[in-house]
Every structure is written in structure tokens, then in C-alpha cells.
Length: 349
Image (cartoon, rainbow, N blue to C red; front, side, top):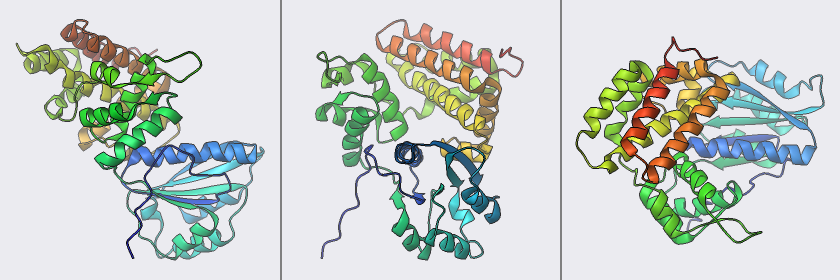
């Protein structure tokens, strides 16, 4: 008998709100977060209650603390969403029996989510399948990324992405879901359509607005210059990088800056939710360690509101460059502003 292919990830609702234990496993951090957000919305809809998120670091959390969170109703009428990061480190010989027992009779006032990059299947999986869901969060292939982009554009960005445009987008950007989603957000903003219908992202729009960013590797050190070197070092890197090269050489440099600001915004939001530094770095795939530490510390200094505003400015600068507006000058001004704001001595009021 032929093996049934695994279901392709999509942005369609994977939950109905009745799940009480969920396992999210796989290396694709974007899908793990997407499924958690989808679950949260489903719980609100099904229970009619606010959802209170409690995070635990699986490398240090105790079994008692996690299960107490699942079983404690709290003072307000809310549904508890208890998340254990790095759950593969949390589930072991000493905790597995109690977790299997809990999964057999979970508290209806809480949903336990075990989230991990790697996972060893066992009897706990069978117990979870009876009252919850186990979802794979694997890296998408090129063939899977285009349908994912079409569904994501429709369900999250409210836009209709043409199949040919989706294929071109994946060819230009690659299969990294974070990059794809960032481009979809910008395309949806610029797309147009008939009154009363979703804006349409067609082939011409992708050709005009999306530059090839599959191999921007040599420009990534610009992030380190901005994070730790200050405005002068950032400008020095740009001058060396661009030299007398064609203007399109600024594209990978702008992508590196845009990605830095996106990560700062997400890291600031996660830090606000008291996510451990190591978990932030792993979730956002920030490496090496020196860059991860510098970025997370900078995000904490900025705070969620200022980091989001900085990302917004980077998106505006990126759009301006793609319209052909003084690419090098735009890049230099943006890098100076970001590096100045990230300085430990900067006034962040």
C-alpha cells in the first residue's frame, strides 16, 4: 500500500477549540507560532472566554508548576493556554507518566501545548491524539511553499495571490516562511482590486516589488555593525559593500537591515511576555550566539512599541528603495537611525 503523503501546512484553522493537549513539533518556527496563534483564536471562539497564556521553559520548568497552571482556575473566568517551550527537554522518563495520566483526563479549563523542534513519539502521543492534536511543523519544499503563500495571503493578509505570482515569489525569496510572510504583507498593502473584492497580487506586482533575496549572505555582517558598532561602523560597511557597484547591490543590504528590524520587533514582543532569552534566539533563528545576545539586549532596551515603530520605518524605506528612490542614500539614512537608537547610551524615551 502506498504511503499516504503528509498533509501540507496551511493557514486554515487546524483547531476547533475543544483541544486540551496539543503537540507542535518540527524545525519551522514560523509554523509553530502560526499554529499557536490559530489555536488561541479557536479557544476564544469555542469557550467565549479570554485566553490567558502561561509560558514555561522546558529546560528548567518543573512538572508541578506546569500541571498546577493547567489545573488552577485563577481568579478571573478565563481559559488557560499553558505553553511549554523546548518540550522535548521537558518530557522525559520522570515526567512522562504524569503527563500521560493528565492527557487521559485533562482539565477542561486549560489547554496544554508542548512545543519543540524535535520530538520522540511514544505513548504520550496516543493519549494526546484522543483529546487534542499533534501537528508537524516541518520546513516546506518549493512545491509546498507556493500553495502555503496563496493560503497565507488569503487568510492572514486579505489578498488574492495568483498561482503564477506565488511561484515567482517563492523563486525570488525562497521557502523561508518568515521572509515570504514579510513580502506578502508588503504586496498586500500595495495590491489593488475591484470594489468589494480582495486586492489581487498578480505577476506584475511581484516582478515590480520583490527583489531576489535568496543569497544575501555577504550582507549579513551589516547587522553586526548596526547592533554593536554604531552609526560610523554601519556606514563604513555600506561604503565597502557598495563601492562603485550597481544600485541593485543595495538590495541584499536592505534585506539584512529589514530582517534585523523584524527580529528586533518580535524579540521585544517576546521579551515583554517574559520569554527566556535563549528561547527568543531559537524561535527567531538568530545566530551566532554573539549576534543573538546583542539583538535580544537591544530589543529589551527599545521595548515593544519603539521596536515596532523601527520596523515600520524599515518597511517604508524598503518600499521607497523598490520604487527607485535614492537607494544608497535611503539605506545609509536608515542604518544611521537604527544604529543610533540601538546604542546603549541612546535616549529611548
